[in-house]
Image (cartoon, chains in turn cyan, purple):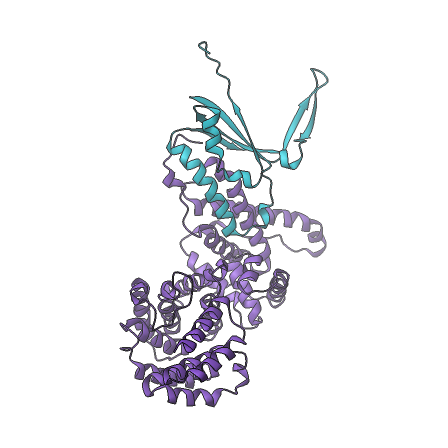
Length: 118
Length: 421
């Protein structure tokens, strides 16, 4: 089993204009997706990121800190799930019905094995 | 995310967000005062958005409703502070004290009281009727402007404007969010029940089925009437009568159409599909409605609905009693539509010709000029009398009047029957 990081981009859609009922419907789709992985014991960790952040650049002594992120809104990182899967094929199947795809894109990266056997 | 929790934890109660929204807005606004209704609504919307942002990652909290309430309360305090600091400079001039509010009791056990008080504010008799309707659905019901517009086939901008006007009137007249005194309650209750009755009828009216919000109006009317019935201040006979009426009518909803979505007449419905649970509950409320001296139109309509609900089929329905009840209803609430219904009951007791004669008496009533059920009823009665030519004529006339697509399909089916006979 390998670990995969699923990054959700472009979630900052206009939630504010949705009705309570519509919000619950969206939420339930996410819950259904995470529940399957959690029941299978493959959901390792997940976090939502706050909208604002800082970007740090420059070598020692010349460091600058600016408000970020800079990315266009459709590329802003909204949160991540860390999931266990046998292969990219399996995780792709997992993501086939991901509710986030209705709002933005998902980036999947395998976490590199750092053990000696790798 | 915490170590694998069973997925049942994530299951959300149906309509949790919508019902919580109504409860939270009522509770916060009641404590902040009706002038800050917008602030309460903003705080609640922010809490729901926060849930939508974080729950997909962190999972649903153990007590979702409590979580939402805490967040909404904190958000309301933030908004109040912001408002107070914006006003800070003005205060020096006017010497007005800042807001002193305690929201800590907002999640105590008396939440039913909050929704009740909010219903009375929304349905205040000095507000225009359409304003009451929109305001009740928005604040207590947790519906959005778009959903209200969809349910009433109106433009969202028109609904939004109605809400703005109603809220302005509430501020200007200082209409409080409170349960009226016991000597006022009967009168004030009338306009609340009127709004709930209207929700139910809008939801019950036949529509294509694609309008899901509209179908929810029945459930919402029953939910809000249930809040009235459970509260000791409003546990009154007319409330139970209206609730009985709505439950008994709702019991037939599953049997009203066939598999193809086509309308079925009362006589054609599979009565095994009537919801016996709702019928039982309706009859219990009807019994409690009979405890007082008052006799409202809701009482009579519920009694008529009960006659149908307990009859095993159309033939064994106590039509003589139904006819008498329609007579009583006519005395309480004179209307050509009630007269039309009475005529149909009369036809069941005395035969189609008596019914036809009664309908002919109200045929020219201007209120029924566009009412398709009038020619449709004449069509049905002539069909029973054996005159298919006249029946077909009336069904054709019914088709020229406004109706929904399932209703049109029904009329066309009846026309075909006339031709086949």
